[in-house]
Image (cartoon, rainbow, N blue to C red):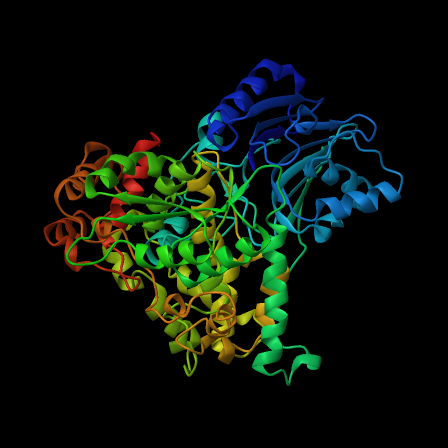
Length: 592
C-alpha cells in the first residue's frame, strides 16, 4: 500500500521543474507511505513513490523499482495476493529476482506476458510501468477499483497520482468545478462515476482498465474484466446447499489470501454480520493474538451510535485482543477537518469520520487490517434491493430508493449557471441496459458493485485508512468471490431480509445473536441531526465569503435547510445540509 505519482511525455529541458512537481506531489501523500520515498528520472518521464512496508520490508522492495536487465521502471500501489505463485511460474521461465516483493513480480510478469498479465493478478492495485528505452507507459487499476488512480493532461504531458488533492496541488492543476460531476454528487449520493471527478481538468482511470500512453501522446484504454450476472448452465439447478458449499470455499480462500504479509494483520470488527464472519475466518487461520477494533459514537436524539454489544460477543467468542474506541460529539467536531482533508474527493457518508478515527487507533497496533466492506453490495444487503424484485420500471424504482434528490430538487439546489440535464438518471438507465440479466435486482447489484461501491465505500476505506498509513484489505471484493456471487440467483441473496445466503453460511461460524439482530447500519448521530457546534461549523462555511464567491448553491435553498436542518433527510437517512456543507468545507480546507 503506497502513494504513486509521475509525469509522462515530459522534456528533460524542464528537469528541475519536473522533479519539483513530483516531489511536491509525493510529499503531499506521505501519509499513504510513511516508511520511505523515492523518485526515478528517465529521458521523457519521472516516477515518484511513497512506501508503506508490508511485503519485503528490506530496501530491495523500494520504489520506484527499476529493473536494469529488463529496462522497465515501475511505481505500484496495492497488494498482489497471488504474487508468490506468479513468482514461481516466472522463475521456471528463467527470470531471476533481486527481491521478495510483489512489486518485482509485476515487472517480470509484464515482460513475459505483456499488458494482459493484469488478468492473472489477484489483488488490489494501481500502477504505472514504463519501458525505459521507448518511454511507452502502461497504467492500470484493479478490477473493483480498490486502489485509486487520478490523471490530468497539460499539453503532451500526462500527470498522475494516487490522490486527487495531491495531484491538483503538487502539479498546479486548475480546479474549476465540473458541473456534470456536481449533479452526480448532489443526486447519486456523492458518487461521481469515472472518468469524471469534481474538477474539470482531473480524471480518474476506471476500474478494470489498462491505459497505454505512447511517447507521441497517443492514449488507448482497454477494459480487461467484466462482471457478468448470469447462472451458468451447469449450475442452473443448484440448490442453496450447493451454492453454500462453493461460497464457503471461495470466502475462506479470499480471507486466506489477504493474510499474505510480512507484518501482522488485524480486523476491523463493527459487530455486524460481515466483519464478524471475517473475524471468525481469520481467527481460524490465526490461532492466537488476533487484534480486532471497534468504534462507537455518542447518541443523539435517542439514536444509538455504537454496536459494542455485538462486537463484544464476537471478540469473546474468538478470544481476540479487542480494542474499543468511544467518540464524543465534541471529538467528532475536533476530527472533522482532518477527516475531510483525507478525502481524495468529497464524500458524505458518515463512515468517513468513523474510518478516519478508528484507523488512527489501529495504526498504533498493526499496519494491515481486513474489513467487511462490500458484502452489502455483493450479497444484496441494502433496503433498496427488495423493491427492485417486482418493479416494472427498474430505473425509476432504483432512483426513488437510492438517489439523495430528485432532478427537480437538484434544480432548486444548484445555482442556475451550473445546471445540467438529468444525466444521473440517464447514467443509471445506460448501466442497467448493459446488464445481461433481466432481473432488476441483478441490474441494481451490477451498478452498485461496479460504480457505487467503487466511489463510496471502497474509496472511503482507502482514503481514511491511508490517512494513517494503514492498509485495509477487503475479502468480500476478491474478484473470484464477486464473480461467484453474481452467478447466484437473487432470491438466495434477498432471503432473510437481505444477504440471506451469507447469513446461512455465517451460522457455521458466528454466534446466532449476531446474525439474527436487526440490520446494523448506524450513522454518526451528530452528523445526521446537525445542531450546536457542528451546525455552526457547517453554517460558517456555507455562508462564508468564499462560498458566496464560488456560488454553487441557490441561497434560498441553503437558508431553508439552515432554518430546519433536522427535516432535510435523504432516502438513505443522511442530512442534505451536511451534503452541501461537506463539499464547501472540503473545497475550502484544500484551498480550492
